[in-house]
Length: 314
Image (tube, rainbow, N blue to C red; front, side):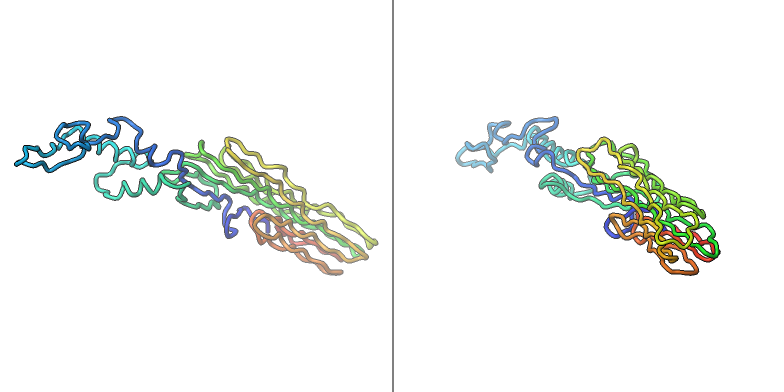
């Protein structure tokens, strides 16, 4: 069986999305930007500070007054701290006393992993709050292995495996606030050439063709050798709006073969994330091809001999 899913880390997703906060401005730049007064010492505001512009308790006997707590200085400190929090993409929350720490952890360093999401059914992707950049991986649906026609008493049929879906990966820094995700469908079963796998898409940013279905042979009499064509690939995936990326088409399915009266079906093509469906080989009788083990891989082809017709597999 070819898979309508694709996989990421453990063969269980169509798209793998790494959500990371990227530190475009280091903490000291973020802390000193925004509206309000630039950072200053209390001595810039009041003459009651000491010679270094710092606070003093004063000395009554010596006639030195204590430093006045000035509203302008308090507002400066408040604005500086608030700018760090909002500059990290957070919303000021009076009930949360850990926002400054969270902001510093977010703003310093090369970036922070927020989440890894696996998408196995068509849906809408919404990024985790604070996400600045995402890494997307996807794969198209594998093609079905072919089903055989009925064979005569002195002949047999062989069917090739389906091709695997294409693969794509890319980084995005914009255009992903709400993305419609489509997982390519598995093709219908039939006693003929296998159906192609559907195209998987990540909105308009990524489109990944599925693999072609395996070819079904006409009845082949007992001949020295006969081979039909394997499932064809579906073309290169396409990307848009990315800052960097990589694409590759799927892999062709294995051809079915007849050799001196014995038939062997073709294996389904492997994908980036696992093996394709297994093939079968025998001189008489018949059997269905195997399921694809990896998401995006092709299904194995069926075969038949001696007036039998295959059950289908994908």
